[in-house]
Length: 299
Ligand SMILES: Cc1cc2nc3c(=O)[nH]c(=O)nc-3n(C[C@H](O)[C@H](O)[C@H](O)COP(=O)(O)O)c2cc1C
Image (cartoon, rainbow, N blue to C red):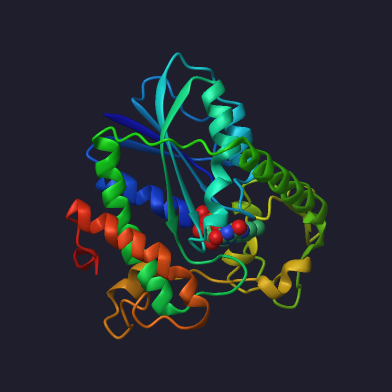
């Protein structure tokens, strides 16, 4: 089976999920990163299965993956699936793919499965090492399960009632417009900046330019947070989101291999905000048990 994954990812979480699919699936898997910097995307023709990956932004799919899907050619028939990553498993996130599903269905794609993998927050607050470790270990086991579902042609109804589509559409539209408007409020602190150029090089929307020695942020921002999350000097001020900024990679593989970090944190010892994750992990535990997959294999 030949599989193509079209992935938009601001800070790498969704790409990490894509790399797990590539690793665990008994198939020839190509990963294409949706970005203004990526060059021409491979055509879906010639692939048996097409996957679409994105991070949830304000309970919706971000603009780049929707635009990308709109630009795809129509197909006579193509089996497709969606995988999304986000910082929490709340059901508020459930309707995030509805716009994408409608775009794809109109183009002839048959979306047979949608899966949601919880990964560490790249905004709002930094997850603890324990939480990040748990998220990554569970992501591996869960993606293994998802790959089995895809290989056995599992099909689920992915369409939700029309009002959820409209609701998600409205929230997504507001978030996108706000992101564009707010874009120029991102600023680089010249006292901290080490002039490595990483922000400019990696911005998926080509929204950062160096003008007369000063980094300028334009109106194409989609709030992916790639620039501020990845800045090695933590030199980027993110405007009104400054209290929600998260800077620096989570080193997930290192955390997963560190025996001194408590595992699992949730659901057994969850306190405070972590209680929000209990339902997600309980559901995954049940699915893994049914599929005969042990999380311990991924510790
Ligand atoms: C602008 C923005 C909005 C977000 N909104 C949500 C949200 O509504 N729900 C959620 O669970 N996580 C939300 N997140 C967290 C991301 O979805 C999560 O960290 C994701 O794994 C990031 O993936 P990426 O590294 O591929 O960009 C948001 C992140 C950003 C930057």
